[in-house]
Length: 64
Length: 127
Image 1 (cartoon, rainbow over the protein chains, first blue to last red):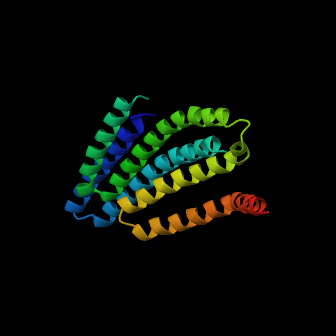
Image 2 (cartoon, chains in turn purple, blue):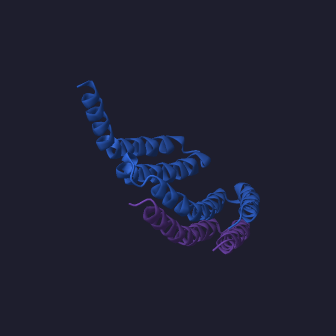
Image 3 (cartoon, rainbow over the protein chains, first blue to last red):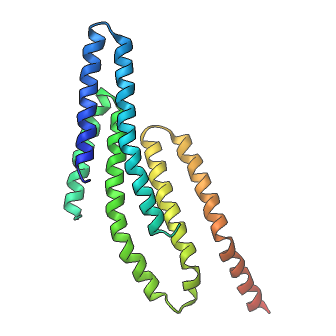
């Protein structure tokens, strides 16, 4: 898991921010907003699944 | 995972988080969360032998019966600390305090049997 997830999030984030800037500069603000929301949802799905794994491991270690 | 590798990952994460603060602030939160997950997972792998050792040396003592409660309290404290720090980092101090209040209440509930047995012990001593 080490650094691959961090690089994935960075890649998606940079891609989304560049695409959003291009879209807003060419006058398509709504599409830029929708794209940024889609990016956030994708990254949130990635992070939440990792969080779930961490919390279940924590619960197992501390006897919950 | 060694300390050096972890420190390297954290420093890279801080730099990336810094980059995203000016571009898109939400992604800096995700980077921070991911780094937190990596560090906590690495610490957990160290916690397991520590807890096993504590269980071994307290075996047969009075503390042994209360050890599961103490370890649960430690777990609650760690998880709440992580959550509250993440909230504070994003400027949500109120949420951090609220989750702190909930954790304190939960720890008190868990330690009620301990407090009761402490009072019973004091009463026995006074008799």
